[in-house]
Image (cartoon, rainbow, N blue to C red; front, side, top):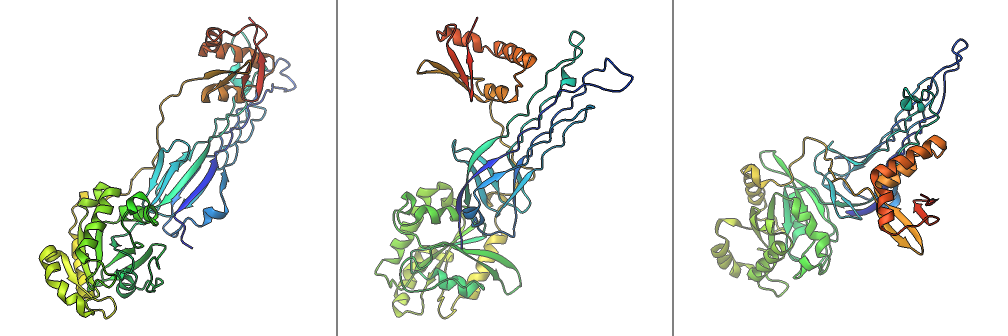
Length: 421
């Protein structure tokens, strides 16, 4: 089954906790702190795998979680890093943050990787907090939580040539004639509901990939029919092949068909207007098609090839013409070239916190403040450090500006604090 869209949730591993420990050797009665750091949580990484052709696996498995880091140990032993989670996707997969709409990665070549969710930092053990004033601190950090994201995956087929045409123009018959692909073929609209790929071999034993994009209709760029589902796959193709019903068997004018198809492509993505193309005037085995051959030749000139997908007329010439067009493409016309480096999106520094008053409770949210709460071990020393940190961040000043009074409640994540001066 061909699936080209999926929604999944991913979570990188939490960092391991740092611990409080002290040296306990027999002849070191006043041993110092020796608590080790926790290990970093595992990352969530996506990689393009040419062995995959669909997002079907994500229909049944929607939740992905990397391993958490190992907690620190005594004798300054640091915890190991959690194992990374590798998620394989087909080449041509677009990875989008479903909440923000930000494109996290565009994986187009085999082996290309992208870091989707970074593992949480490991907490520091008490050995890290020793100072000349406090030589035996009882302070250690919890590991930072891993990133959690809702991800939308969109697969856009990677093909050299994309067949574009109205339903029943003969695209499925044509791809079956040009390659070993065997799509479903019948004489009714929307027989083809999914794109089909085929490998075309030229007389010189060269090969290229051709995609049968399901039939478009007028209004497809606005989602009419299955327009958006189909049009996304045209974006990746290097060359367009317009397949026209030269016999006008559906009662439409063949040149009007071409005009509508081109307008739909341009309305969906204006870059498609500049894409190299050829025109296959199909169904030349029908007598009515002969009458349209002259007007088509006059309109398209050398761009048109007259064929019959049923009898095989003109197929060899069409294969060779497409190959000649592909090998002579300027480099800049080939879209979505593979990236040599993994794609990692850099985000701007966020505001440390936000405050809102809800039924008399001051709720504080924000990535930095929530991470601080998650990593704080609320023993005596940990609480003191927490208070110093939020004062440095300006939280107390902001709460005072909001009108907080002693005895009011402040809530951060699942923790509630009573404000006092």
